[in-house]
Length: 226
Image (cartoon, rainbow, N blue to C red; front, side, top):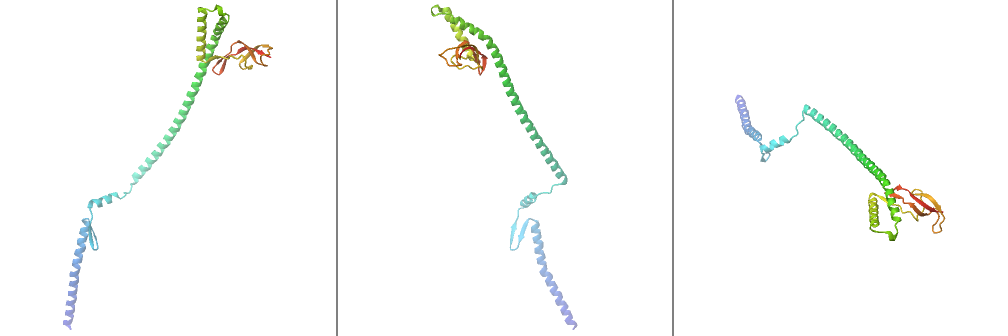
């Protein structure tokens, strides 16, 4: 009986040793696999794939890093400053646009005022020249054809040149004879009965009227038919 117990104990010990012997290679294999993984080798069942350590570093570095709290505060501050700068830029743009529009309006007004002042001065000077033109016309009207000579022809040339210069400045005669009387342009100094003309028609221009551009420089003194 005792021998039988010893045999059983011996048998159990043998089985234990066998299990430990079988387990040892497996542990060695696991240890080897762990070492290979640590060296950068990815081990799967049935095959072994090698991975470049530089690729692993690139993957790790590509992961988003958490932003520190102090950096978050700085980012918010920069965002606030950016928004304030954008608002200031918009305000300055609106201000510049308004100033530019005001400048254009002021320039337009100044141009109109300058033109009006020029026209006023030109009209004043031209009005003073019109009596000289009237005297030229009276002098030439008294000349008869047989009395004309070199001197009178020179006077006519001076008169024509004067009229051309007046036209260049914007002063032109109305030549209203045969037109309907208009109190905006004519001063009626005489009324006559004349069957050749209709009623309220200018029969004769006793003193020439002149226009300066679109305004009356001098009203014409006229004789009007009834």
